[in-house]
Length: 293
Ligand SMILES: [Fe+2]
Ligand SMILES: [Fe+2]
Image (tube, rainbow, N blue to C red; front, side):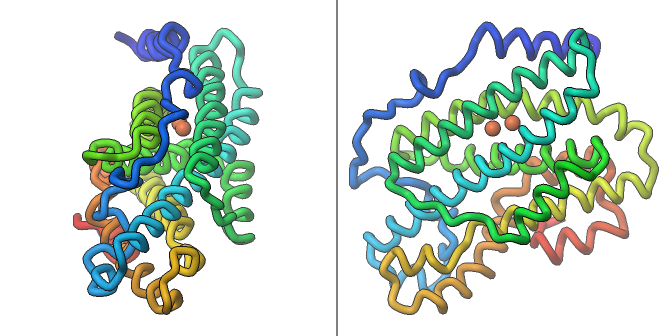
């Protein structure tokens, strides 16, 4: 199959097998106290002595707030992606396969945002908004950077969302609303990731050392930036932890290790494929993302 045929196939799947969150996610399922919101291994304090000091209820509360924060962060990054894609498709012709696929991607991404916000409501969550700095960087990325770099940014976040979602949805006894929502997201994001990789191929194949280094740093910075949206001091306050500041500080550095160890597999593989690990980048991946490379 050539490039055009592959993308046409993705467009066709999106049209013939649409997954509507309204029907796909069992929204009416009540929350069972025995079910989990995420695996312990992904909770920011996991592995620290502080984690064992928490009561079962506090652990559950932290995981509820953290999954809410993760879903909100994805929805936020998806709305930034939609901003970029809306701008980008203006430069395409309607007959181009990229145009046709990106319209499908936009439709799906809007549905995802609605789905995440409904799930946050279902969990009775109250997500913490990104900081002013996050907003400035996010807006700058989607409106000023060259297209190939912005697509790299989007790909990094999509691969991250996919990996994280995979770890959660494959955990036994996850609350069914979260499980099905992540199943849906995984199916549709797999197509978005495939499309973006196919499309970036034309840029990557021509890239020399400097461009590959820039791509590697683009991905690294995005993940670093995105990671700072998850762990917030208010989460420990809301979960009834006595010394919230102390727990936050511990969790903040601990989470970097958890993240480096569990969430970067696919991303590292991709960076490796595009020859993005070299003497100029490898050290930064190890220091800033705690990546084992
Ligand atoms: Fe999405
Ligand atoms: Fe996507």
